[in-house]
Image (cartoon, rainbow, N blue to C red; front, side, top):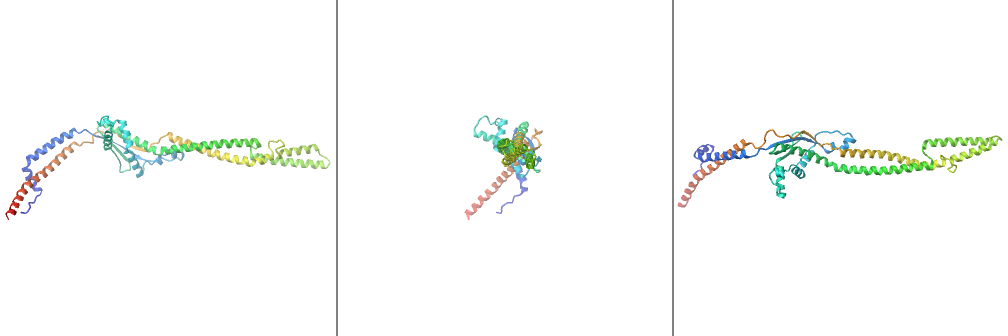
Length: 369
């Protein structure tokens, strides 16, 4: 026999024959789904919206030393970094401990791994961190307590900000130690060079190289000129021998260290190279020391002052109405699903009733033949 065709037009007569069982199933589903829907606790959703920034744009070293500007917005890598931090295990454990979510979720005070994992799973299922269409981060937390949901969301934003700052904090601490070591070294060398310069100046009597060179040249030339003039006068039968002797002694004192003059040509020539080298090194170390001191102070200030690495557009506030459950949708969905399942079940029963006798009759004819 040809197979009977079925269509949606056959459903109404079919349901009419099975209307009592179907109606009972639908009424029972309506009753159960209504009870379940109203037994489900209200869930409230709180959302915080913020923009991440790249670490280099909030680096205090650049802001203090280079005058960098703080600008909101970040790249895809910045968004991924924020989401990774927010969904990391250390952040979840910190929030769980702070708000005692183990008791809040009714999991008891047991410290077993099973309970700990259950708390983390429940927390993760209630947390959502996604990028928006405008490159902002939307952090949403859902809970039965609308005030707790807002507190958790805002706390998560603060923790994410803190961890994001700490990504460069350790490196800045190392840089600070390097600057401190460099400053201490330059300070020691500066003091040693200054002491050497002072000792050399005291030893040779050389304090101002330019002024002393002009003074010595002037005095030596004038003394030699006077000596030659006095010797000429004595040779001509005039003048004074005592004056000649005094000028010779004055010239010797100006040119030799044994003469007794603190400023003399011999000491000046001996000290010229040493004092010039020490003075040049002194000036170089002085300049480097000032720069090192400034770099150290800027880095120290940057570590003491924390600059937020995110820009909060909207803080999380307690929700004014529940977000879950949508009770009417649960009831309507349950009844609809039951109706579909009833139609399928009734169709299968009708198909079984019609096909089994046909199959039996066909088998009997085959045996008879």
